[in-house]
Structure formats: C-alpha cells, structure tokens
Length: 121
Image (cartoon, rainbow, N blue to C red):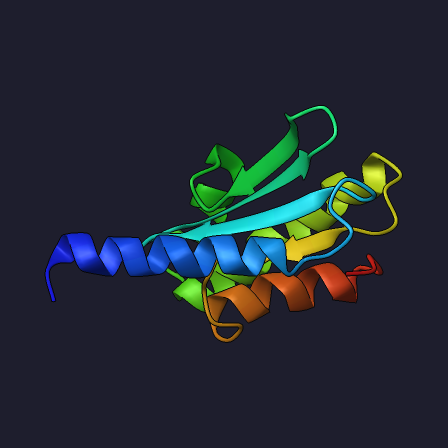
C-alpha cells in the first residue's frame, strides 16, 4: 500500500465522519487536527464558512506552560483553552468533528477537558 493509497483511505474516512455528524449548520463545529507533536482545535461556523476561533499547543502562552509535558497533558490544556473561548463567546453547544481520528488518547483528552468546563458536545 503506497502513501497515496493511505492518504486516499484517510480522506474517505474523514469525509464519512463529517457526513455522519447530522446537524451541521445548527451549531458550531469543533474540528480537531493532530500532528506527531502538536494538536490543534478550531471552532467553525458552517453557515458563514468562517473560523470563529482556534487554539493549539503552538500558542505562545500555552507553549511556555507545557513545554516539557506529555502530549496528552498538552491536549488537555488545549481543551481548557478552547472551552474558555467557547464560554466567553456564550456558546453552549458544539458539534464535535474528530476528523477521522479514533476517539481515544489525545482526541479524548481535548473533549473531556471541554466537557469538564460545562460545554455540551
């Protein structure tokens, strides 16, 4: 299996996951992307095709705070930052798009941190 075949397989899974979300457009969509070192989260408004805000482990204030911590702890901190931004914008519910990733580890840590702050997913 070549790299191109793996990429095609991933993109199919990503699209299939997005289709199954259901109520797109009714609530903002929280999209997670992870690389080998970092994790990124964006809140998207699908009606206006706009990114409302984002947070990542690359943000300056977070980078200094979690410099030598594990990736799961970094993901939890990103989740807390996203939850604070969601609360400041008075958004009570979001739709979670796991972007084709399995729901465990770093992805689960982000969601658990957001739920812990009282945001409905």
